[in-house]
Length: 278
Image (tube, rainbow, N blue to C red):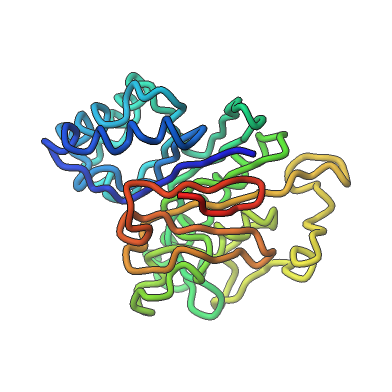
């Protein structure tokens, strides 16, 4: 049994750390690891970044984060990530890490992700150059997550993004915003499927195989047939008015941990059952 605490979209401003720090120190008592799903700051400014470091640095449990779109707002995301690393927070972007817990090892693969939409209403690599670039960003972001998952070789795997990998957890948001809140390509990456924006708004995915658990026989992650480790849980933020619970097309559990959605300083999930216990 592994306990994952998670939250995103705190949008921390200067002066918040002293008030919030006691809330997050509680994570040490109830969880094995704390995951942060992006938009840690309101505008990506260095002052706000320093506040996030004061909030999460030095906690007596591993803290793993991805950045969100707000954290990129001022173009200082590299400095922010370096500051977090110096404070003891592991920042993932197309990368992965393995945490040893009392309940066993858990691997976390993370990437910010990107928008792009979902089946039937998604961008494609055609038309105006701007739309092609949008679609390429979506594909690149999903491939980064897929590559990060490919680095893991442990039984318990968690995918951590800011953007949503399924439309399930966007229910409650305006439909017109879905293309800016997530992408089906992130779900494909989590399911171990090829990622491609395709053409004419269609998906070039083998979802029947994914639903049956075949997922390219494990070759997509660089593993021999029968050796593929399935993702246990996918976490994201970004959708403040969305729903907490969803799944990928292959049935992998997805949880939207944006702070306004979970309604508490952090949610706690018990793995491998994916039961919310706090």
